[in-house]
Length: 210
Image 1 (cartoon, rainbow, N blue to C red):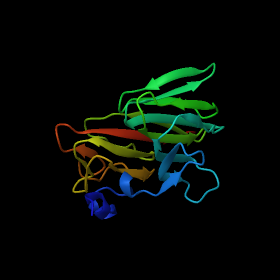
Image 2: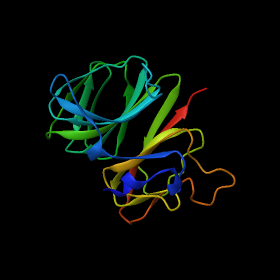
Image 3: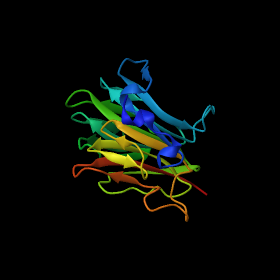
Image 4: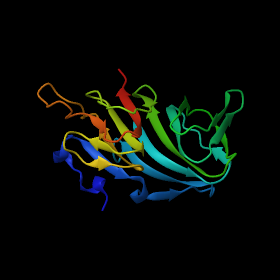
């Protein structure tokens, strides 16, 4: 059992939900070019998501589906990179682990794999309802109250909240707009804290609009 499997709301950070990428359900792409592991989609069970986080393993070059009305942030997690092209819009090579790239889901894309298969974090938000940004922190992360989001560990060890579970590479937590330290909370109660000198994570901050 992984440390994250034993974490719950009593472990120091209310409203946090742990995950391990290797235990997430795998959905194979219809075109055979890869697979998606969904971390979270909110609202749960709704016909259309407000925001969604997933991890994709891209195994072969090919087209990406368009998502009208959605804004996306794609970040390389592993592999030698992926080149995204959209005629008349951009030609972008994502080759640095942890460097986010934001673009409109309205665009139809083609993906090429100069160095072979890769893994990416995919954050999608419904335009006009949510806005997302992805950062690469090496220090403590304090999610703003009322924001949703996700933290994914790239390197080292992290702790989710005061006395919470220890997270290692490939593990993380997501929250749904209820995290953040309140006025009466102890210092660090609403933070994600690095525990090792080499600690690096990805933090997706998903903020409500309006």
